[in-house]
Image (cartoon, rainbow, N blue to C red; front, side, top):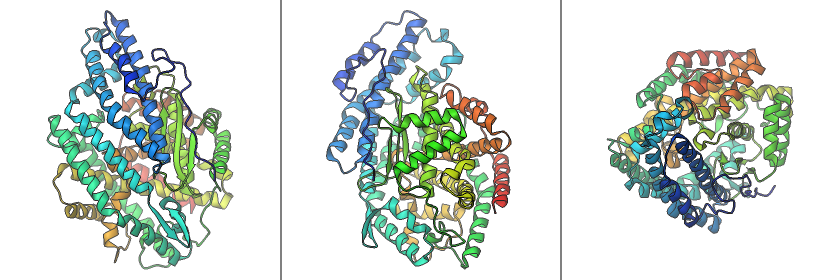
Length: 573
């Protein structure tokens, strides 16, 4: 097994921040921020220079936090890594929020704002204005507490291991057994993981309850009746509302859930089962051995590199820049936080990809998904305005999810022809199946934060009610306690509240990119890259339009896309 990546120090030249600045040390950041706060703005160009210098300084601070977060998630059992991250959260992040608000005010209230080019600065000024509107000093300490609670969840999750067939396994490593053709082994592995999660169920409930209380107070501090409405504005959702989310839930329930349930009926019949159990959802219905696209992290990166070489020269070049310089930590191990992410280190402008690969087809999907985020970071990295080097998550996830689909014609690097066809079908089925889960998680959060004083029992009851609405046809007899706490595995609920419907909106966008590629792949990829290159410099509808797709998650588009994917699945049969 390869060793974890070493996070490289920033090397890119800076315009405002001295090269030797330790941006994890507030005593070194404070004078620089103070000089910006007190800087006299005599003209339009002075304001523009302030925006650029602030971007440079914020990038240094963001990269310091990124490196500490990366170290902590790579080694949740490392006391020094944990301390470094928590020290930043407790002592630096609150100060950054405070000076950030002062700078937002300085920019928003400058008399030179009307002179700025609205086409260039409009998105930034809109965001700055929103931050000024929503900032409350009393929320800084609450956010620090919330971050520490999220870190506790990561620590609990990272420590979860089971003994299975005489070996200690992480929970990600256990996923491969759900693909085994031996049904008894699948059941045993599923129960082992479920029972291990159940051991910490009460602790996780407690963490989530504390987060709900903290966040409800944050919303009320900002003058809102609830955290949901506060968070939607805080996430700069200028182009849709909570009511639009409800319409998305209805569209998925009407046009997607029936398709997922029909696929599950077909699966049960193919397996010769009266009903599906939770351990029957991943196994191949024809009894074929599980797909094993790679052996280890090194093999995964080599094959992914060749895939992009065959697909597009620009994407290939970008991917290969990540093969060195501490940009990858791919394999699962004890003490590593769950999940996967891409984190752009904004000062050095180098992406970092984190995942828990164990050799599954799912891991390959995660690899190209996170590569899509990295492409987004790399294509927009030259913009001197920090805000524009990232985009709203509704579009950021188009960057990643599109890669899951655009790489489908190039799976020969990983599979023979028969297995490649099988992998394509699994991916498309997964692209459909994730949409009800997204709606389920989002609807759950709406209820949770509109009813912040609910009990644990009420929480579980609501989860089960939503499962009846969005879930499949799985038989949970005798497993009710596990079903009621399935939401606990969704890490976004703890550290990124309400950051999940983006996956649904983006999946619909990614499906549009993919369908366009079936007609003209070269043009679809060119449009995709053009959209990504804008970063976050334009409003969401314009980002989607530049990428050649529609910003639309209403019932008609859902119905249209489900029909198209259904037709493709029939062809793959």
